[in-house]
Image (cartoon, rainbow, N blue to C red; front, side, top):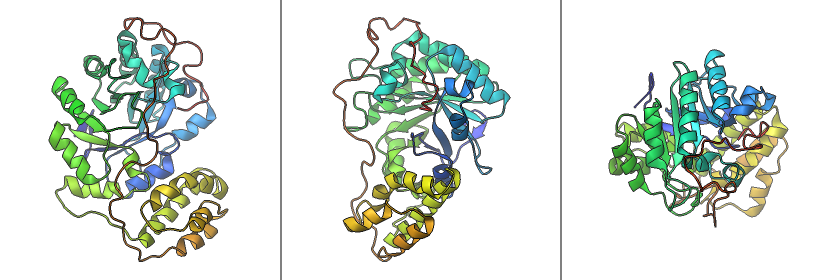
Length: 370
């Protein structure tokens, strides 16, 4: 798969996930396998205004290539300035535009998955990004639409291709679905048929490497985007390497091997987040994902989420039964799930899809970082 000038093999992308895909987690996944590993979502205004926390979020390791930033914004002028800044200052090698975020704080302000409904504004944003990115490839990630009555993905993809994007990715759910139900892989197939000029990547319900192969076979997509499937399972990227090379071998780590991976992850977070206290607090959310399916007592779980030092964490990990085998039937949803009763939108948002008005104050909170 080719994205701009970059050859991507295996054809795999780590999806941007807020609070997850920081420099430490990206390195952990890179140690397992290949692909493109994208930063957390970055607010374009925060980047242009040089908010220090945002610049920390876009720090890349020496081993990262290509360096990929996912950019969020609702104002063509600000997006254009951010893209120009990234290109001129060498901040990254690839820009991905976010038109898929379904969380209420984003959609209620007209951003993320809500924005493609405003087709002219969408075109202006993509045009500004592409024109100002210079030689950097610009891609976009989106959802099917706001809900089943307001599907936007086919028209949005056509607009994107006309404006020069290098690839499009589709999370095959609507914003209303959030992370509930099942991804509609038929939509990925329809998208590939609609825009054969560029690579199309599919996203949604890839819990193991064989899911990825099945998605490609069933939809004809050029590659896959992996999000929640790698939570507590960074070795999924090793499996994806093997799968796309034709190997049937898959990782089935024992609890001892999982514990070693947990320690490596915690160690990396401590390194990139400014010390053991911050790193270990951040790692707490990962504990349940790593241990899903294993027979672990509640006291042990509590101990692993209350340690204060890496040495203490290593000691708690050493207490796990190293020979406990990989549990059966553990593939499936991890992280957020459940459908929304409705999608939060700005007042009157659905009245006129041709409206070019930029969403009002607060749509790009410069301190949000996504």
